[in-house]
Picture 1 (cartoon, helix red, strand yellow):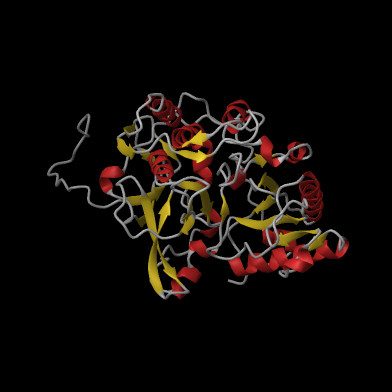
Picture 2: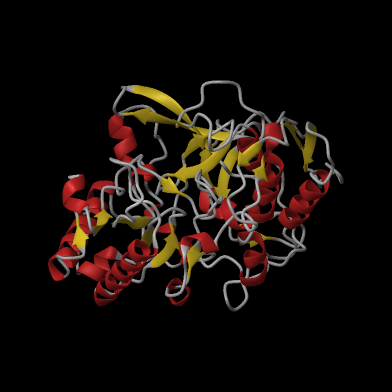
Length: 433
């Protein structure tokens, strides 16, 4: 202790070998927790990695227009310190991030080659890490406590790429993880959680160019406070746990309108007509949801499509969420049969917008807000207002253009988890006790 606390003798001192997660209402002026309530033990976190987050007398509230807390907080200061260290020319670096150390190598490696025009310079690993540091305070809340799937491209977008869901090797002390039961392999797997800046930068160091996350969090919510947090012991435990209760309904809007330049059998490439029709479908979907008293948020996928999310109270399972999204999608398809399909056969999708409701499955992932994509131009999955979507194009949002935009306008989804809506109320249902 910096200052010994007042004690009632006799006192027995214990070594801090366990980490407990607690909920609480506020910090007292003296730095103690106000109204703390024990939630669970966290055996996935090393005690020595726990730090008190400096927030002053309460975090600054977002200002009008979605602006995030001011740059004076500890997270912004840590990011600035990282950016300062990355200014040097060294190709290797032991990066200091608060109390953590992240060893960086091959900083001059090109992750995204230069494009044909002057407005698409090459993006090196150093540039990518600078991007992650600059957007971390906006991106980390969307990653927090969500099992992560890494899309790794250690040699850059022109090299080998692979999905990695599980991590069996030794981890740096600052990287948190959870153990989840695998229903397909009948065994336990460790998933990483990108919960802090050192982890985000370490993931960039190992070539994670895309960050894909579950739609549920390993964290309790007030409306689901009684849900178990045992994700690992069995399939039944996983299905009963909070990880089986998503934060969103998810609609993946995927244009199957071709430019005519694709190779035989290739997926549609980005083209203005395809994206324009995709936007039109997103607006139709928004209006239908509004008729159900549900408000949706939207982001670009970073490639050719859009992701429409409906923030919800965590009272329905993934199976129930999938059924709801299928019902909504089929209703929209019946209203616009020439433009929309839900068909899995690619030949039946051609010329239409495919609404994929099957993203509402436990364990399925989409790239998180502000994740880059491993395609030329280094585009980013960008949260937008519906008004901004009208004029938006996917390549408006890249590793170069997104950080200054965020500094000016803030995160359009900064309060998305505070905008939860009741599906029970929307559908006039009552959950059986």
